[in-house]
Length: 118
Length: 322
Image (cartoon, rainbow over all chains, first blue to last red; front, side, top):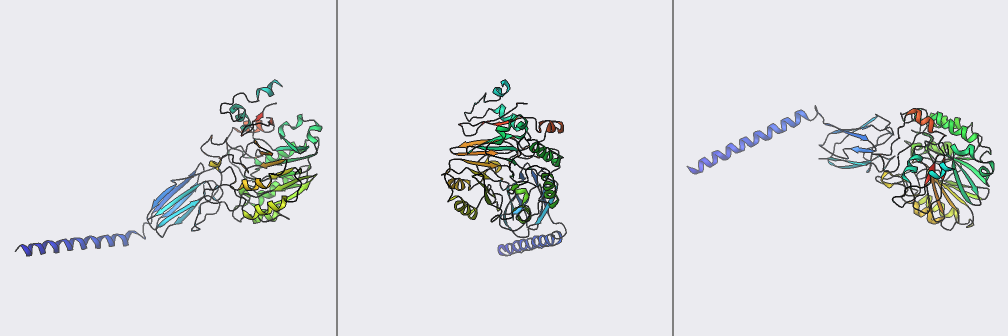
């Protein structure tokens, strides 16, 4: 008697668990392509803000130069490289792989930042 | 005379040879270049605004030339919406000299965005200057997007590598160096191994008594590394120049006049012809310093700057004999 109750609880737990997994997968498949995430980095006063940005895989990051002086956004490891951004110009890059992406301004190399993709 | 005395060091709280008040006055000078006069191997420089007051004897020396810097042609923000106009003022000052300088040095940031039309405009304006020869080194704004290809095509004839070269004038040896290429994340200006080797070889056979003038865009001394105002391998370059009795280093980049004397080496930075930048560390960033338009015009060419030799780490650059 005691044995059959245990089995019933176990089966119930399995069914609930599977239901959760199925819902999760469905949600992921439905939302990922339709609603890509976007994040912003502002360039102000010769610095990237935020200097360290954490995003999920698939996120597009847009940098905007708000200084009176041109800047660039260049990956230290060569993953991405903007053209020269004059005042109010933007550069975007979509991060499709997890990892840490350090970058800098190739005109003012003291300006550094990183994007952490997870 | 009284005014001049007033501008010498009055307060030297940090014992570094800088009178903060005089220093700020200097910063307010959105100047138009410097005249350099070599006399007995010693280089003296005067702001262009002081030139009408110089006697022709003072202005002549054994060799005189003009350094202009950071014309940033194409810049059109509030700090100076008319950089072509202020460059023309600089040329007018040069042309008003009683003795025409032998040549001009442009220590970089000729253009703001490396656009062909920006270089064209500067070339056009400088054509009206009496000195016909102009020697250039690139600033970081001149080598955007193409690794300096356009700069080399326009100004780098006969130069080595990214545009470095040397030449002799009246017994003095001039060396143009490039420290704006291949900048690394977090780093400063850099000369690089190839250029340093060339430099070592270039000066190897010169007599120790030869006056040396080195010019490059980013300061070859550590002005303020936090803002990138320095060159990481400049010590190596200076080591090759140690044997010479007179070494003068002329830089731009920081849009303000500063001077430092270290042993046999005198370091100068020139003002910009376009817009001033803040005193090291005294603003959130080294961006263009905005002054009211009427103030910009009034400071151009009216405030005097004298380079005063000092014993301390940074010599005072004082002002006002207006």
